[in-house]
Image (cartoon, rainbow, N blue to C red; front, side, top):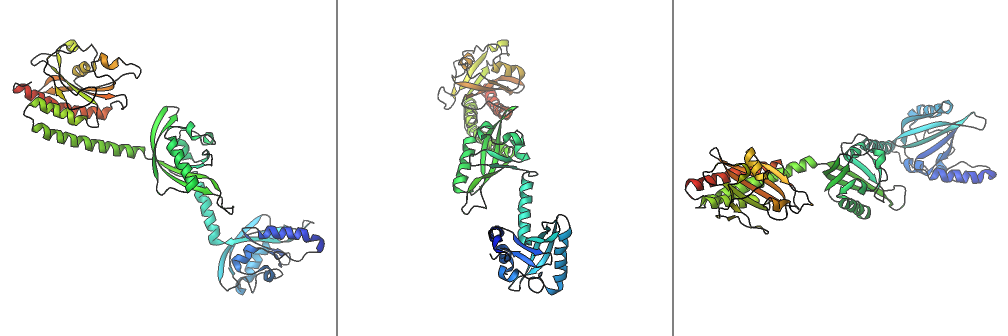
Length: 446
């Protein structure tokens, strides 16, 4: 065979096998006997330097053909010095191609010993330096991603189960790196797993997505469920050793952007609410009746904030009493369907039970939030609120140092409970409603 020297006939099968192995290697390989004569030269060596085995095997060293004459002794000496030394040695040489060009190669050489244990030659594997550096960079990048990366990196197999997880991803998933391996993603992610698995299936079938995807998920952790937003990138992994691309799985990279998304959502919410108050002020300014202005503030405040709203007032001139016996419904949005607020002039006192959120807000002179149990259908009716109400927010109406009553915002079970920022907004609305109510009473219309 072309990759080896001529062997005796009884050694021909061994020679054929050795030649086939050498020619199939991805690295260039040559071998020298104890005298420095080249005995083996594979196809990768031919590809890099351009010299075929027929012209390389049998030459003594590289002098005069594969290396400059001035460098020949040094190169040959360094290569053959390893014959009697233990282990491997790494060197970089500038070799000559057959067309006269120069190529910088990195070699790994080691001694070969005969059957008697004595040095019998040297084998030398070499590759172009830039190719070796590219390989080292790829390995270094892989190790860095799985150890020091500041974003999560997970390798997922074709069954969508993690096979490698870096430290950042393990922290984000609230689990150990080894405990995550082989587990279905549905065991870790309560909500959002369908969207994530859909993206992984798409990448396996079609390739990488054109842009990062933002996915909201709810994680199951020891401390309870946590809602997070991840910006995800996906790469299809294929074997470099197969003739046709064979999918090995998906490389999933993600970064937690929950704080940024929540900050952006809060900024959008604040901007919208500020705009609603601005529009409400303009609408109220066109109302001849100050109580209609108060109702206008409610109508504008409801958009995106609550399903219903109520205004409860103390009788004009009356002091606040325990139990709220003198609170009267002054305005309310219609129920069960939402709509513009309707003024109420019946004057029938509300019989709120002790501990009612409206009475608590009046007593504390501050907002009160309340939510009912999902399985309790009587929670809302017992508090004289529309059926289906699940969450309430009561804000006190204050003007000129007096408590005029309270405004109540209500949400259904399909919406989230009121939070602290919602209470701040409700107080902003309450200040405007209270001013309108006070004006109505001052001019004799409340």
